[in-house]
Amino acid sequence: MARPKFAYFDGQIVPIEQATVSVMTHALNYGTAAFGGIRAYWNGDHKQLYIFRPVDHFARLKQSASLLFLPIPQSAKDLRDVLVELLRRENEHSDMYIRPLVYASEEGIGVRLHDVSAALTIWAMPFDRYVSKEEGLALGTVSWRRVDDASIPARGKVAGAYANSALAKSEAVMNGFDEALVLNQDGHVSEASAANFFMLRRGKVITPPVNANILEGITRHTVIHLLRHKLGMEVIERDVDRTEVYLAEEAFLTGTGVQVAAVTSLDRRKIGSGEMGPLVKSLREVFFKVVRGYDPEYHHWTQPVYLTEQVGVK
Ligand code: PMP
Image 1 (cartoon, rainbow, N blue to C red):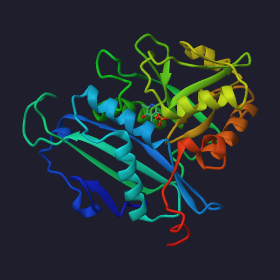
Image 2: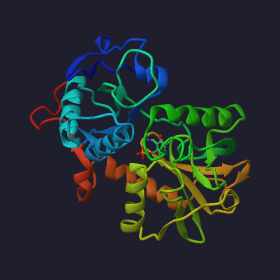
Image 3: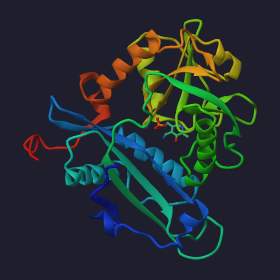
């Protein structure tokens, strides 16, 4: 796997080898951290690297951190500027995955969130697909339930809560599926292990609401907008039953990692034809055009990294 060359650490960009923490770090022991996941897309025609919705991602990071009382002094725009600088230093001409992390940096014993020091780091590395089968994932409903807002805030990207996501993903994969469908405490569909869920039923797109213990995905928001405004679809946010998914015409996942990935079966039942359907196909086309910076209507979502005079220099 590719590795980052640098990291933003302790307020400056340093070689990745210098960005290390002690085994005594609070976050490492207690999961007291919040993180983000951002993609940047290389556009070979423009010779430009576009970061997708960085300010929105950093705004969510700040919200996730605030749920844990972890302060981030910089604004979302300041962090976007730091990221642009970091990516210029990395100087890659390929798609990138970016990982910002805010963590309780205290060294010592004591489960709490008050009076704990916090630190922020960002690193980035070349990245292609997160799931190999974006054109057709086999999902399995898992026995684990999604973390509840009354236990660990599901709308924050809280590091500790990812033990729940990892249990779900591994159960699905170890049972022969590609990905998990995770139900919430009510037994309704919440999301996949690290992606939001959508289905097409009777010609309407349906996705679980923000109070179904989902992460409020930025790709979810993007896709709802594109479905409505580019593809003229009705999108409804409401509770979804597992057996409705069995009867859906199409289904898909959205997330920074999975991008827009077709779901072609759930619990060994084919969804629709059992192959990627026409809606997911059109949505993927629109989505990749937007994120790669080809659609001028959405340039406010794509932050160029390289100065025009730097473009092509490597
Ligand atoms: N749910 C979970 C649990 C996730 O980890 C992610 C990935 N960040 C998503 C949904 C999708 O969110 P986004 O579109 O903002 O990447």
